Figure 1: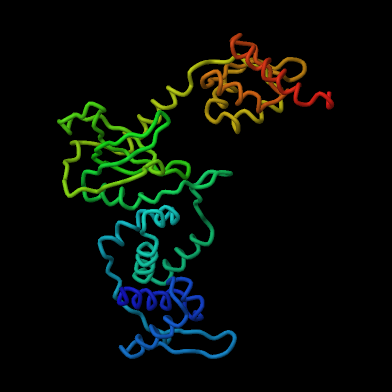
Figure 2: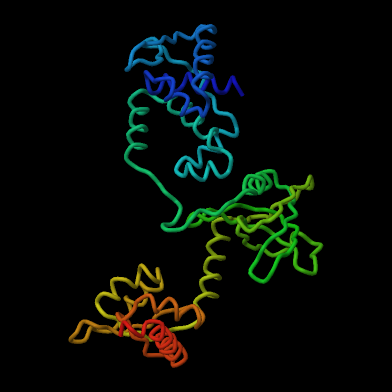
Amino acid sequence: MRADRLLSLLLLLQNRGRMSAPEIAAELEVSVRTVYRDVEALGTSGIPVYADRGPRGGFALVDGYRTRLTGLSGTEAHALFLAGTPAAAEDLGLGAVLATAQLKLRAALPAALAERTRAVAERFHLDAPAWFREADEVPHLAAVAGAVWDQRVVRVHYRRWRGEVRRELCPLGVVLKGGLWYLVAQAESAAGNTERAQRPVRTYRVSRFLEVEVTEELFERPAGFDLAASWEESSRRLEGAVRQGIARVRLSPRARALLPMKFGAAGTRALEGAGPPDTQGWVEADLEVEASTIAVGDLLSLGAEAEVLGPAEIRQALAREVAALATLYPDSL
């Protein structure tokens, strides 16, 4: 591990120029004392590194010195594919590996291109998690990801809304969606399929794994399996299952502005099919909604900016909810 750290230190100085000991310590996630020891080790091994004293001092390489020790390890090469999502790399236990891989890659580039990669990093940033939601705790993510890579069978204890289950899974891939991690895997049924090749592909939220045991048993991936295509199909099925009905709604101009934010793609589709506005700017539209109990809460978020015209079940449920709310605030009417 120390050899890797010394190489990372050398590449940091090569790519960034003069750096202070605290800056290096922060980058390498070590103590300042360790930085001083590592700099001394570099000098002893013949690397022309020197120290500038003073408030603007730091460590630097002699002008013109460049190392060519930039070959990527297998793990570093894999980690580069997560370069756009550093938080995801951290979740997978590859944060330090990714940082080293990026340093090596930049060191191997001509000076002009290396500077351009730095400029891109300074100007573009991808933040995958959704707003206003705490990220899931995923203590078993690294184990699951390792099983995906090594094609090892896992036995899991999983919490779902109907209760807890234990399953044997053949993990095929992990997906990061809106800041949440999911495992795509072939799963045995409750009866316990024996033919793994015939097992259905299911999706599991990684944060709901209570226990994960990675076995020594290997499995064969299904021929022609495409993770991206499988995820897209699964997403369509989920959306179809969730969007169980259509509500006819009358929307004010403000509600029309809020609809895409509150209902996502379903809100956008409703506006695209809306009728012409009346004299007050209100329009009628058909909005895809979830089950009645959930739809009522979602539609209440639009307040008095929307009126549900049908179906009668949702309109009546909304009326009951509004009446119940009114009883909580009798002095405010």
